[in-house]
Amino acid sequence: MSHSPNQPILLTSSLHVDDARKAIAALVDDLIQESRAINDPADIETVALDKAIDRILAVDLLSPIDVPAADNSAMDGFAFDGKCLDTTSPTISLRIVGTAFAGKPYDGTIGSGECLKIMTGAVMPAGCDTVIPQEFTTTKDELTIEFKQDQLKLGENRRLRGEDLQQGKPAIAAGRLLRPSDLGLAASLGIPTLQVKRKLKVAILSSGDELRSLGQALDAGSIYDSNRYSLTGLLNRLNLEIIDYGIVRDDPASLKQAFIEAANKADVLISSGGVSVGEADFTKQIMQELGDVGFWKIAMRPGRPMAFGVLKPVAGKSLARKTLFFGLPGNPVAVMVTFYQFVRAALLQLNGANQIQPPLTQAMAEAPIRKKPGRTEFQRAILGRSADGKPTVRLTGSQGAGILRSMSEANCFVILGHEQGNIAAGDWVDIALFDGLL
Ligand code: AMP
Ligand code: MG
Image 1: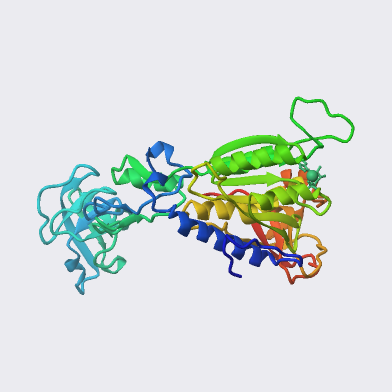
Image 2 (image 1 turned 180 degrees about the vertical axis):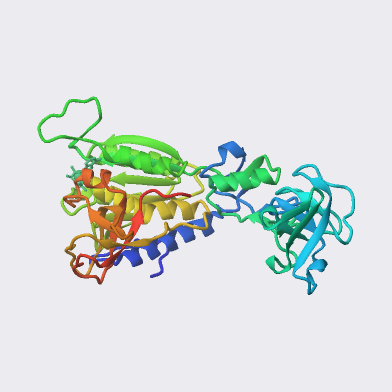
């Protein structure tokens, strides 16, 4: 499904989750093309390594050195010239002529019939290409080792210069969402700073007359605004700049003002509430007046209604860029599901990340799960392990879209595909973990 930001996406029938994802990706791509956001120098910052976690690398990081810088030993053992392995005698015996430590190379040359005691990481001495691990050797006398000829081959237990990284070649590709290992890798190359994409400015707001801020009393029919807090948590995981517009009343003037401000300040606006069928029409009118916004009915549960599009910079303000807009449903679980399924990937894509979808895995359903074909379901669940070591998954209680506890107790989504019907106990199902090692 192709889409241009100048055409609102209006849909009355249900949209397949995959098509929603494709439409979002296409529009984000249009925005990137329009603003050239990826390569604009104004979008690149230089940050110290210890501040670079969860930022997106803006340009390829080229290795200034070969890693390892020299051939070195992968084991504690004895280095020697592997040519001596080409023999018919079953046992090889070599004379120890010295020792090489990591950081303290041996300068001499090792001749035929000789070896060097060598520690892991120590530079291989001239004339040596093979290391016999210490545990494979016996000592004949204090200065002679013996080992079986068939215990290793020429070149074994040696790390080659440049085997890990070659000078001038990319060590980390642009677009990497930087993880702890990337910071360690940059440090191992002696690089103290990284060029990263600037933090996206993401505005959030909650809409609804029934919402109260924390600290306010709950009058009849009112509820606390929880969505901004789950959204803030989700966004903080992406190391973004959050602009919080708080709770916006269901009245045209407040809504319009908040939208205009957000459109002029933020790269992305995420609102929750106000997009379902029961809402006053002015919400939708304002969203359309200020941008190109479509109202989607997505074939998914939870999180069916969603508004999506762009807000245009308002006349008189010299904002070069359009603001991406997500009008998420109001239900607390639906907010989180639509964020994980659509918003997170769009934010990463907009900021130039090259890996935007979290990995899926599978587990066996502990109990039957009811499922209607014709929509994608995201059920909240706990991943465990069966007695015989297989991954298993069980749902966390009531799965209503407003029941945040089902989300809080869960550690993964069970994702039931569009065409899928009922699941029997023991069936394998797709799961996406909320947290994982990175
Ligand atoms: P809506 O999409 O505005 O019709 O809201 C759907 C449901 O989610 C209603 O029960 C709302 O009260 C609830 N809701 C909307 N916004 C929030 C919020 N920020 N925090 C908690 N619940 C909300
Ligand atoms: Mg509402």
